[in-house]
Length: 342
Picture (cartoon, helix red, strand yellow):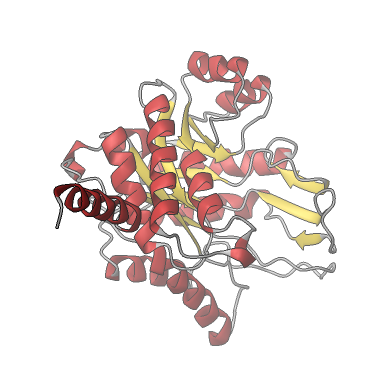
């Protein structure tokens, strides 16, 4: 074979390999090198903002972290974070992952091909490097809600993030429904089955810290307010056991409780979206405090409520506009600090 043809075939082979076999970054960082202090004994909420004065209000309640995207935050918002001493669990990586896998929403998810995976890794690398030197970055949020299997994508995304920022933790969130008081075994089993289904996307190999968020059910029509088991007495211990069975260890991976600090009666669909409103009962002041205490009793070392202000329209009760929720939140956190966090 002529030398020119040999070289042509050689480079063609290299090109083909590059497009079909993405190279996963090799991680040399040990879990011992991760800064877990930024997600341990912290208090905060999702969606604190969007205005900087909301940061100041949250800081007055003792918030130390917020969960949200830094990519759209204004300069004044970032300055408010710095001046208050608060940090962000940055959800931008999670949004990048979901946009790549489910570009048309949860009903349009697909498996990433080699080119798409490489594109996602480049995006993550660029973004994480841009945030790695920021004093307001606490951790990176990479998993939220249940979507089809993401194990391969999350493993690759974690390695990419770790290479770009060796020390900040990754956080994964998993759903555990709140059942009614005196729920029959069918309800309890259904809640645990949903949690186990979400666990298919969990691994201690890519989740440095794990959140469990537990909300009462939603409906499309008003329902008589039921009595819910906010202490999660029949479900939380089972969920933690299932998490342990997947390799989670409380000595290596902080558990973060996400209580339901909201209610919709109803929340209206976003502009241009069809469908009815969403109804969901908010916990009372004492019920929210009970839920937070239950998390800490089960081993949670931080509390991040949903939500401060998620920009929902309609009749919405959240931390930013409901005094009873703020009081219940601070009462529960105070109990965690006094009785469980030392």
